[in-house]
Image (cartoon, rainbow, N blue to C red; front, side, top):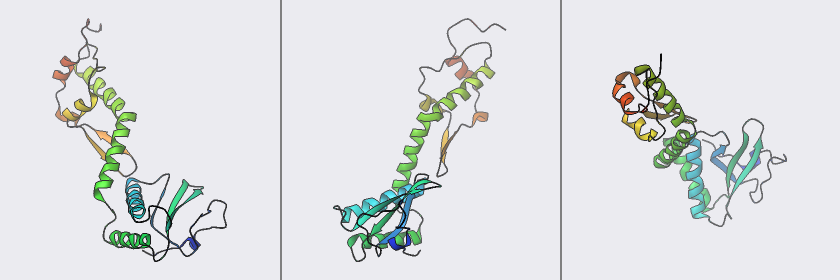
Amino acid sequence: MTTNTVKDLNTESSYCKPERAQLDWYLGPVGTSRDADSVVRSNWRVLIERVVAVDPEGVDHEIIHMGHWAVGWVEYLAVRPGSQAAVVQSQAIDKLREHVILNEDDLSMIEHDDMTESWDSYGDTQFKRDLLKRLDDVDPKHEHDLDDVDLWEQFRDLDGDWEHDGNSVSFTVPWSKWDLTELADKYRQVSEPVSE
């Protein structure tokens, strides 16, 4: 892992205008972008927290923000050589040589937050639709109502699981292992059967 400097950026471009960082300031070892995956976002957050802890006034570091045609924007961390921020940067470089993740706990938090946001955004709706379809397949003569159901709890009761691939979250239920007849009875609307 080499250490680039601000000089390596196209500072002549209108997209890159450091405010404090001089051309000899070190960059990295991680940056981020609009489309960064969970590992990059975690490493970025951990590195910035560590640098800010030793340089809270921002005298010896700067986050350089640039527009980018492919990913919308990118950010780089620049640190003054010989500063405490540079020591933190050097420690991060050494850690990343051994392991791709600076802090496993932080990565887990990011992935859990992504999962929660994804569940609220589309996972619960997808699960509800899939469950209703399966209940209707088991008990086609009745309507089923899931409006007052804690969908997350029901998802977990059915051994539902989630997977984070770094960029997105998917939710799965091992449907084939369940006899849904009991659930169909539980969620059957109190109404006349659907006419055939």
